[in-house]
Length: 133
Image (cartoon, rainbow, N blue to C red):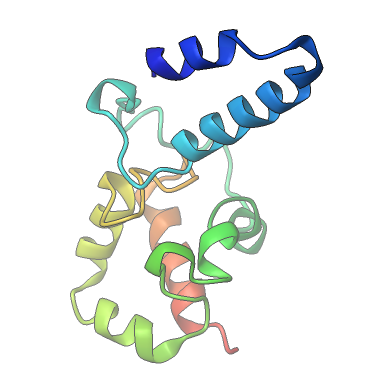
């Protein structure tokens, strides 16, 4: 990354917008990367993952799962694609919840729901697996 910054130092002041756009793209790419460095992972305890009050699963889905599972980005099974979900459901809910919590393939640990409980992960999985197209 240091090489990138050295290359950017020689750019003219007129290209400050280009630098800003470039750095924004680099930072967004790192944030959306399917692999997250071990040191960057937040180690959430079971207590910190428990919500303070029950939440509406449909709203939670819109805030967390929708961005990947609505379009199938990076191989995420699309919400309502019962065929794609059937193969996953065959693995069992415990495995699916574990994969959501720990990360699996391109899905980062905890997906985008850093404060979800295991029960909420299960409810979200059922919502995505059973919702009609």
